[in-house]
Image (cartoon, rainbow, N blue to C red; front, top):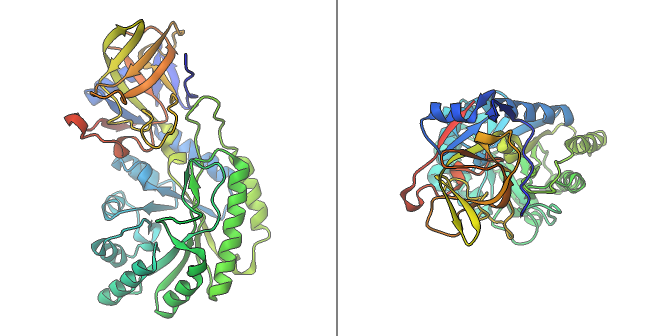
Length: 408
């Protein structure tokens, strides 16, 4: 038997079933018309953002990292609850504008920006987080063609990284950002060239649950930003401090102590370097805002036994939930939180493997899970499905197609 991850605290039981937003899983599936189905909870997102605002200093703006979940109704909803949006492609820029975000609220990061993407973003008035000196030259040239001062910030590749983060985004050789020792010269060049200087973007890692590691990193980010500004002789109108706040996916994961993070940041803000006193600060978060708000519902289409092992075969799988299958950067596969949604209130009776419908042994949603008895037709729920699910999985694999999505 292998333990399941912890179910987020945003869901209830109704008539013995899993309830999301006050409605049963079966009712939601009936409305959607079919499974598999991603369901995202408005209440869970709003509660998470409210908790975050209560914990962080008032001067910290909350930005949503759109790559976590670009579902249009979710974007429209979150636009009313956050202060900015971070995108990573021209396609995301189009979706962001359609969702109601204003250009001044949007920043554009990511290596490999194409000329047409730079043109569209600079024309709209979006801030470009520059990833290289070459990209800076292209952005300045685009501004000249358009006859506008491009809004430019520098994404810094710092010499440090975030301890305990699931994915390292800073320190050492990286495709992201400009090595910190080369930043002052470029910052001065941008200002001298007449760009609308927007400051720094310093992102060091993701999926961290250790508050002390985040506190340490944020202190390092503030120190670095101040030093780079001093060396360049420029101010820092805006500092994107990155994010990296994680959520519990696996057994024994503990929630991030956001109150400790906020308290430490308040202390730092009380003693800021002079060249950061007038800076606007932002925290960039994706999965932390929406990850626990999502549930992936799929239906059991077969129940079979092989060598005394029971398999619940569903119509879902890794083509929608690549991360839950363990194939999205996980070294050792562990179980996400999962449940039999149709029998959510029932006690566990058996140990089963939950698999998807694809012709690959990699298509696993839960291994040796202790769950209530389930049969063909019952619904399975995989939690923590609000981030890096539908849009980060190979839905075209084997012609299976995309899952349905719903915001409730």
